[in-house]
Image 1: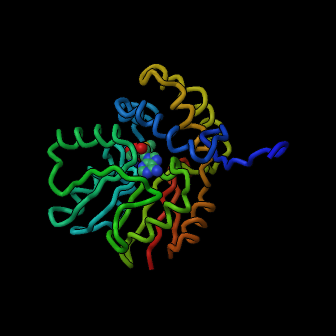
Image 2: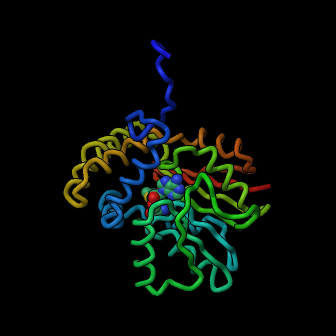
Length: 253
Ligand SMILES: C[S@@+](CC[C@H](N)C(=O)[O-])C[C@H]1O[C@@H](n2cnc3c(N)ncnc32)[C@H](O)[C@@H]1O
């Protein structure tokens, strides 16, 4: 109608507002661009600390021998490689990710390490999980939820496919507690990360998106509320490295 602006729904992509329908494509471009350099960059950006966070995440996950686990947004397979020995031969780990390039790098990498049996790789969107209700003992999602457009929808779908008593474990960047660390962290994120991205991945923009997306992600209490809203019970939060990252755990009751 003449003179009437059409109201398009928007969301954030880093610090930019973009049409809701575009975010998934933009996130896809980021991970397709960084897939080959993703593992090296994680080590450089975090001084290797991401390995400790991931190990701790799996150690406190409560995942047991024989469990069937979905590692959602599993990317290049770091979490799956740690989960597989825990679930053992009787268990299974399904690595689900929306991005074929990330899954491809992960599958090659874990296959080279002899991790094949009991691992499945499947392309999927966290907002529409291709599994029946009550399918998994546990779902892990590490550094993935931040990138999902409709997080409430994704959390509700995770709740649906967990077995009663099953657990969701989220490892994600969160809100740093101490003001001093927060200042240093901002400097590292906005000055150093894009430069590392340019040098080692030939892509400063994707690493600028990374820093910005962390700032836009819900903080510890907000994410806890979202999990409760999605139907999870006994939700607990644990900060690592003063809240640079946090682990959220919740159960399907
Ligand atoms: C930062 S990487 C994390 C990879 C891995 N979990 C790790 O900890 O190293 C984020 C991953 O989330 C995936 N992702 C983004 N949006 C997604 C969605 N809607 N559904 C499933 N995966 C998604 C990306 O393709 C990417 O592989």
